[in-house]
Length: 174
Image (cartoon, rainbow, N blue to C red; front, side, top):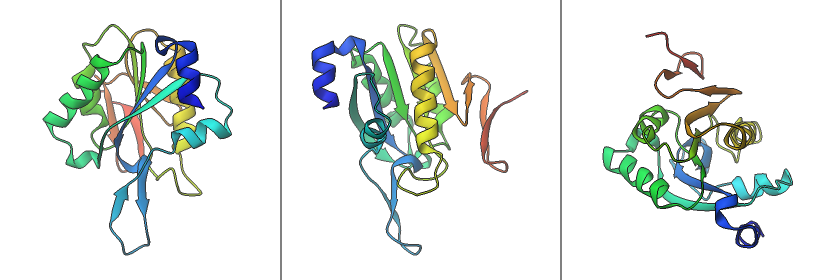
């Protein structure tokens, strides 16, 4: 349904969701199993929320962000550059989200928001739907530029950092 809506409205009027993996899309089979990265839960979340913004989902990779390389970040950048949409949401692992955002900083012709989750979207108690909804609101409201949207905050990638001890993102004073 969303893909048809994008086609009817024109791609430029919608948003592009680039999925890269990370905790937000992780699947754990049981407590002793390794994880895998599955399909994005975004379409299901958007449907439950009755989201009216046209969107298109494109998978770039399925990696834990700790395993991402400079080449992976360049692949994400290439996907953004190749898109027709003026608004791009990127779901990303939280450990290296800031690094990827910084690689995108000079793409000044569109609004780019990166978000993720501390708990997989498939879990009953997770921050994923909140972060996705907040990121969509940010994406639709902010001027062109690159931003990180996590836990109700919009952060500049130049000063953002993940505080692992507190389990949140914050602006660095460094």
